[in-house]
Image 1: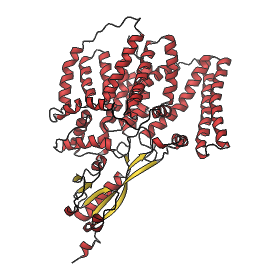
Image 2: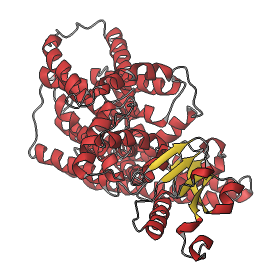
Image 3: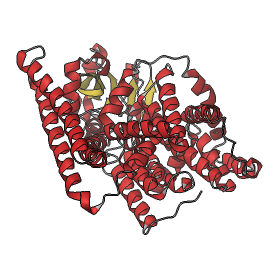
Image 4: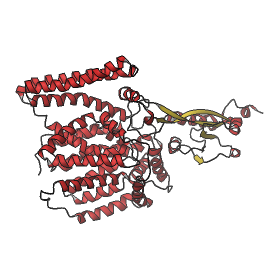
Length: 561
């Protein structure tokens, strides 16, 4: 069934796309690339330099980014993240492809939710992230739904070139669809009208052409197929990411989505809504897959965010139409709900300054519980005194106002706009905190000693850090397991250690390199502090930059006759 479109729908989608692109590109290159980002970015850079690196299973990112590097002439943090930012922005246009499944208004609201979702924004600002797989797979499904088979084949190929995450998404969608068909077995199945064979030729052509960068990089195809064993490896390896952190992430970053989705689930299953039942099954299956995969990571839950926000959009749309005679009452309920919630938030924020277990701490805790109960009681009284509709619409928009503001704060934090001192769960960790300072120091030493800020070669000894290689990419970098001091390199980077051989002929300066946030060692009081102030216990790894003594003007070698 095709629903009637409303006026200026296309312009509104264009506006949402521009907003999404702005959020994803503002200060895009400010944060240093982490090791997981720098490894594929270096591979893209090496391709532009005429080398033939072994590619990681993210060929679409690597090959598309190599084109950007080639056009610009070199690699930058901004260009290394531009492809995911652009593709992540295109995700907001996906609802247009499902106009037969979702009405225009909830589709536009869904696009707005995706544009400002903290998780989607964070993934769109990370190199080689699952945002490629999410966007391309959903576009491919939308093209199949609209019977645009040539486009469906092209975007299916793009999805398979996007990395191991695509298999997690495919399995989740397949399981959810199978369960849905089982639940709806009493209803006749929709007749199949899609001839998949028509998509085969564009799929194969795109896979070979895009997967090899027009046959320039033939090992791009092997990198694509290596995503299959890489995905199965994730079921044998174990990470230290606890499943409980998914729940914390949903509550902190998507509180509005959780509230509206729960309301939609209750209503949809009571009335047997096929749309809500299918979306809820997709959300539950995607969430369970993220929880039970042994090497879980925060990006795995991204597959559950699309159905979550789709449910939220469907529920919020029910509360848009307000009659003139009930407008004043609803506005009053909105402000009452928002005021009580603001009071509860201020009380919650004040708990971080009080030692836990004290009388004042317990008083604030019960005051918080009382404020939340007051919201419920107030809405019940409104429902009894005026109408259930007034209480429902006013309560939804009041909570949408405050929870939306909370989620929007998470969006700007996940985008890194607050700076590196305010960590987010969605960040890729550990972060090379002083990468820019190290790069500037190496350039200064090269300028002083050799007259050119990029001429001095650098030896990295005993360190496995692609982010370090990326930070020093403008220099000739050699990575070795142990340093041969007799080779007397100009600049050496080593772990923090006392090396007498280097100390006698080199001058050293330590830098804080990789900063790791201790999420697994946080106490309940630490979590409260993080939610309110974005402060978390952390530890750092230090390295030393050694410069040969004769690079300095006041060195003994310079002064000797």
